[in-house]
Every structure is written in structure tokens, then in C-alpha cells.
Image (tube, one colour):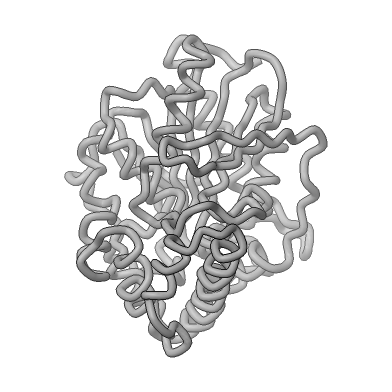
Length: 337
């Protein structure tokens, strides 16, 4: 289903790069007061850290951040505050290694890794069998969310899901980041990822976990890596059981899972997203009847800043997301307080 969008880009940020950069580098959102961290031990004796906000028995929203992000990303903190004001609790998942403390194994998060979100969901559902749940993912987290929704289908009990700025076709997005101004984002992200993987190796060695550290050592010299194709081939594929980058992209891209989604899902994609091309936007026949596709223009990548007064941004996602959640919550027979 195609949904007419209400987004109108701020005239003073009327460029997808400005939208992306302002959101990523200039926005400064204080952490919500009262955030509580919890550590969950996974089946492989590692851990994930989750950050809770809100009290009581209100509906619970699971939040998934993007590549090199965390629960401290401004779009996560801002949304947690907004959701709290709108009658929702939230819990933000930090993908492995993103919480501020490095994990106990060489394996890491990636665009197709859905075991941890499924583990978190099962833990929460067991604790709160009657709570209304929803999930929201941004960028990489959106790809993980959509893939998980498609994999699990009717096994999930969620009243809604929302995915924003999703790299639906990973190969297309990796290639897009090799061209034009998008190479600036690529350089920054690849540098962060290489620092992350070397820091993980040092951490594993310091833990005395040489077997896991050796898995990273065997990846070889990473200094020459400049593109996502190279990084995903040399690092992600080798650490996570893929044959190569193409195999990783083919198996992990979420577009192929859209037809299998049974949860009411809003997919927000910007036609000018500098991390991808419009070739990733699915045709309506690729969507299940539960998926609502909203295509915007001028929102950038996880930007979507509106507002008529310069440097007085209106974060449109924090208006749009609660509207969809409340609509679907009402249709499910629940109501936010």
C-alpha cells in the first residue's frame, strides 16, 4: 500500500546531504532522564545491552539503531523522549559491541543478523506476555527489522513496525556509496568500522580470549580497504559465514522479505537518500498487504527535518511515528495512555 506523505523538507535544509549531515553531526539531544541499562546474556555466552525508558504497563516499543550507531544516537534518544510523552515505553537494543563495551567474541552485528533481535523479543515476550509490542528500526536496524519480520511472519505478536531509510538492496547501496559526495559518508563509516574491528581484537586479547582474537587476526591487513564491497568481503563475510560480499548482500537484503511480513509495517524511504538510489524502492506488488510504503523527497538519510525557522528544526519522524503507532494500536484493540 502506498501512503501519501506529509513530509516537507525545511527550506533552509532543502538538500538531502544537508538533511543527513545536520541530523548526524549538528543535532544534540540530551539523554532522557531515567534511562535504565540492562544486560542480557545470549545463548553463545556473550551479551547484549538494552536501554529502557518509561515505567508501568504502557505499550513497549523496541528500537534498533543504524550502522556505527547506538542507543546514544540522537535519533534514538529523541524518539525515546517523544514516545515517553505519547504514552509508550521503549527499549533500545545496542547491537553487539555498540553499547560502549566490546563483546566476548569476534562475531559482530551486520545487516542480516536477526538472532539478537529475536532473542530480545523472546525474552521480553516471556516477561510480558500481554503487553502490546511494536518495533522501529533505522537504516541498518531497519534492514534487520524487515528481514526479521519476514522470517518470523505470524510467529510474532507485534501491533506495528516502522522501518526508516532502509538499505533494502545492500549491493546497490554499497555501490552508490562509491560515487560522488556519498564517498564522504563511505570514508567516515569505513574508518569507524576498521577502528571498531581492531579495538575488538585488542579487547579480546586483553580478555585472554586468543582464539577469538585470532579470527580477526586472520582477516589480514585492513588498511587498504576503502569500500563497503571490500570491507564486507574481507571482514563481514569471513566473520559471519558468508562466501563473499555478494553472498552476504544477497542473503541479507530485506527487500526479498517484504512479501512475507504479517505485522502492520510502515516503510519510510526518501527518494533522494544519498546512501542509495531509487532502484531500491520496491514496487507495490513486492509488498505484503500489511506493508505501508511512504516515499518522501528531500529527507536525506535518517534526516527528515522540517520547520520554517532556520536552526529551529522540527524532527518530522517524531511526529509521524507516534501517529502510525497510535493508529495501529487502536486497530489492534489497545490504546496508549
